[in-house]
Image 1 (cartoon, protein in one colour):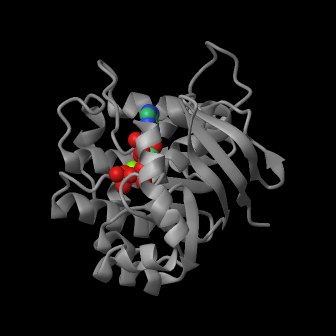
Image 2 (image 1 turned 180 degrees about the vertical axis):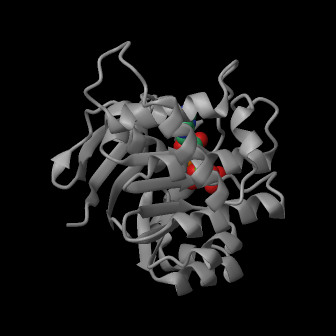
Length: 269
Ligand SMILES: Nc1ncnc2c1ncn2[C@@H]1O[C@H](COP(=O)(O)OP(=O)(O)OP(=O)(O)O)[C@@H](O)[C@H]1O
Ligand SMILES: [Mg+2]
């Protein structure tokens, strides 16, 4: 049976300011969903809320995986249930190598009942698996020896995200892609990596303005967010239309949300 990530009538505030105002969305394992919308419409807010960032307060509505609410779970517990978020701005963790970080992350997910201080997954098995994955993705094995995000270029951060995805094999991947500062190599790394990793075992929510990413990973569903609500859902053609035309026609079709747009953003300042 495939798993279902279901969001129902979700309202989310940041510092008491309402940002999401009734978002409903269901993602099945194996499906690719694109989430689009103008700057400030609430896409990243939804991504952070899904993985349980403490700053984002759910004021009403539910997030469920296979019928169980996960609203109250911390990010670690959510990850164990198969949720993964590639952050828009990955953090640097000083002194931690890529391989060490991944070994911890993989251990935490595969042996959730492990007590503090109990062993990590055996180094030999882990190394072998990591090497295999890196080869599949066409990555230089030396990369695993680098310190996490320290001095990483935009493209290397993207490689890290994809490698994390490959090792953790989440049921649901939330990819919030920054659009500035990524050169075409970096976009290719994510686009191709994601395509290699996609399949019936992974559902994804891809947040991007990059056409390339969605050309490589054709979404079955495209959702458009405006002023904290999903105002339209279509297929890959809708993503193409938005790439070509921008959001003017969406705003025309949804005058109420369009007029609320500024209000939501001002409240958030
Ligand atoms: N941590 C925060 N503190 C204060 N305001 C926030 C925070 N996170 C989001 N907001 C506000 O919520 C609104 C939605 O922001 P969000 O980052 O979700 O938009 P977005 O759709 O991801 O935009 P972009 O396309 O630019 O990434 C904005 O008005 C933003 O200022
Ligand atoms: Mg964003």
